[in-house]
Amino acid sequence: MNNTKETIEDDTMYELSELFKVFADLTRVKLMYALFDGELCVQDIAEKLDMTQSAISHQLRVLKTAKLVKGRRNGKQIYYSLADDHVKTILGQGIEHVTEED
Image (cartoon, rainbow, N blue to C red; front, side, top):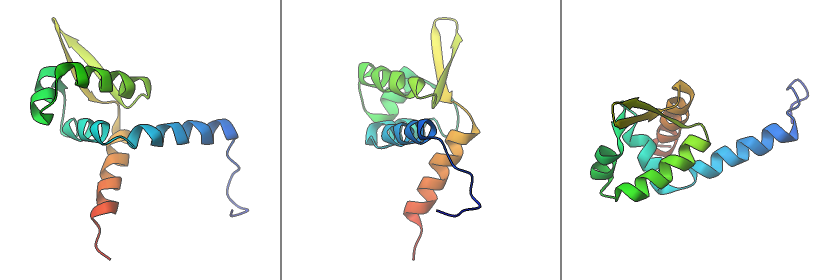
């Protein structure tokens, strides 16, 4: 490790590893990508990903717990979006990395 680099606490490293575990699930990555351009309700996400609303709701709970998505209530409907620009950057950089040609 570079000596000029600040030492990162184990707790922070643990949280980072937990974050990447959430990204390790194909369904969750697809769900976050569906939200890349803006907010959607559970029904719209389910249709877009050809999944049940129950399955989408379960994955949204995981993503909300990890602070990767957020919900906004409009009447009886909840619209979900990526939590912030950091999430969009992580997802975008990951896509760029894996699609990059040597």
